[in-house]
Image (cartoon, rainbow, N blue to C red; front, top):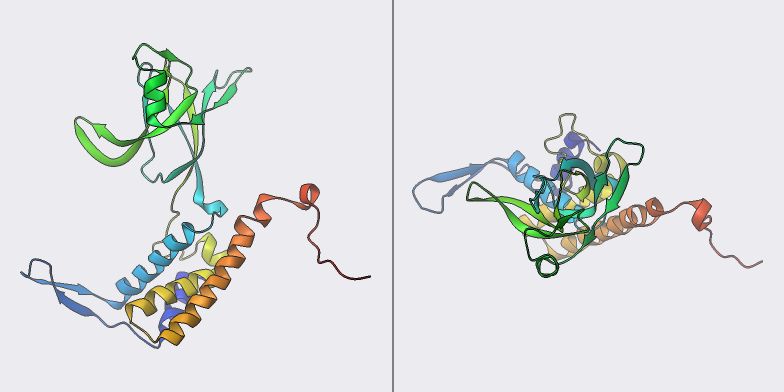
Length: 243
């Protein structure tokens, strides 16, 4: 399902064109206008975030590389970072004896207690999500890691992390993995968000919620079931029958 198909389906299912609305702003000094496209796009993006926080599917994983600084225990997170899948320090990167040292997740207080001094340096073994990154005494919206021990040299780092992929509402070709591979959950998620906005009838609200839950169950079977194994290791799926 493309963005255009989803957009039209939401309007057709709800029999509503979502006309332009104008409201007085919070300060009471002017007005704010929202057209139907903005409203429907909001329903879609809210549905996407709900889905992405319920089931883990491959498009939610991203990989980046970075470099630590010698004698600096902090490492900035990517701008679109949400959570960690894994983080590794690469010893002798590019050499024949290259080695990936996967770091163990700990609390900040553990790292502070285990390596209290700035001179406690070496190959990092642990990491913790520290908090907002501070640049030139300005607290930013992005997070950072604290490493322990403090890196004694510049090491390459490979980070696999969870993020929100591009929304179907802004994709240049109007397509995303979710829209192409399992559109029912996106459709019913958007319909549910829209029907809440419309303060619709409870029986239809329940119907949309039921269809959404069914779709989420099927997507969960795919994302955290089928895509986490194979027939070689797990055996083929089968239904037990009486002889």
